[in-house]
Length: 133
Image 1 (spheres, rainbow, N blue to C red):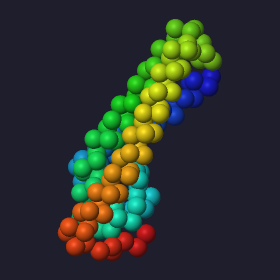
Image 2 (spheres, helix red, strand yellow; image 1 turned 120 degrees about the horizontal axis):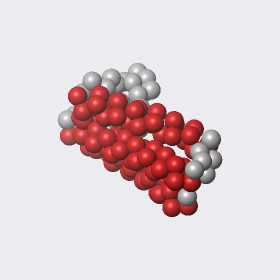
Image 3 (spheres, one colour; image 1 turned 90 degrees about the vertical axis):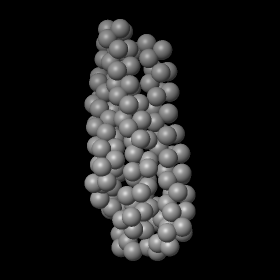
């Protein structure tokens, strides 16, 4: 049963990452301090900076959606082969952990890079913060 819950949670994460990717890529993700993703003061400085950073790093959200989707497939396959939603093979468990870790590392690295990129963008374009979040 625990793995069924994991499939549902990872399914929600897959949808969330895909949604943020689509909105980021199209430039329709509104600037708020509550939006999905890593938001630092530099990224919230202006709509221009916000759109620049989220469009540039949109592919990382797609990659995380794919990693979460693969986690669902591996979990389901592991449980089906084990014959129970309460158990999956060791190979499946290890692969799921690797996929989840990869998604987390991707988010952290992207957040750090995006924050630095936003700071550079603001400096190069003489943008000062106008956010009130």
